[in-house]
Image (cartoon, rainbow, N blue to C red; front, side, top):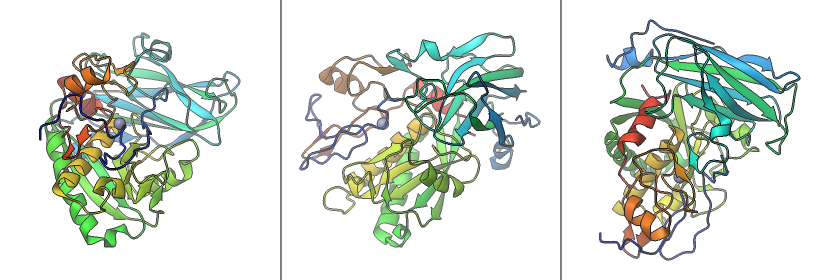
Length: 397
Ligand SMILES: [Zn+2]
């Protein structure tokens, strides 16, 4: 379809484009918003079984942040490509990641470099939730893992996200991935039906077609999917992920296996029939966590008539591809405010609506859908550096 570069903007990040309806601006990445198992190191891409063993999760251990309100998590790296730290407080305390020190003692990541910066690499530095998850390395330009001990420092905070809160118990799990292939990867996904939805044959068929399109889009970045469908008793009116939705997300988390990305399919998100979907975190955890889910509202994806047309199915698939794109570490190349960007060198830096839609409107991670009365622009582009992020996600086999 031919859409002008400055066509009407009908939707804001992850909110359904409905040319005939007002939309509600909700941004998932509203970004101001924000153990040590070692296998034999065999990982290469030698088939499903070998790849599966590339991911190792530690036992979950309870630690306390003590008088300083901080603690160091040590991860032993031996021929691994990626590591993840998942930390959950036992109460309302907010959790964030402060720094990463490599085996030579060099600090390779510091929250101060990113907290007020206009470029984003992780939400883990923002103490907004009762848990966090952090992936390292993130980008192609970040130093590859070297053998030895990495130290990831975690802090606990009051609900303001700023004031240190000492003496908090934190459950820590560390995950390493030894798959060395940075060109081709695969993510395991658990698609979880909210209560009763698996009985809706039209929805199931549309979802399967959407997943096929999602796979095609991700294939452009060398990424594939293993999808497993799961039924549940979760209420189809899904919440917007926040510090108060941890229990539901833990429930969703328990329906997925370690290493899987849980995607919850409900009717609505936040009681908003125009909200497509929202990712629980950037990056998302692949072990038990109150952040561990992506929520998708099928009614928004089906459009105002509630029936999936071919165009609706295409958009639905791109919503899965976009939201799980967040989960595996991608930010919007530009935020809706046009004053904040991802930290990738090959996604152009634009500064206004027209320029951004022209330069980035077909990128999978563009923050909103560009639509006119005939439909919405397809978003299938992933750049080399976006691919590099996806391939470095610890859940990517
Ligand atoms: Zn988004």
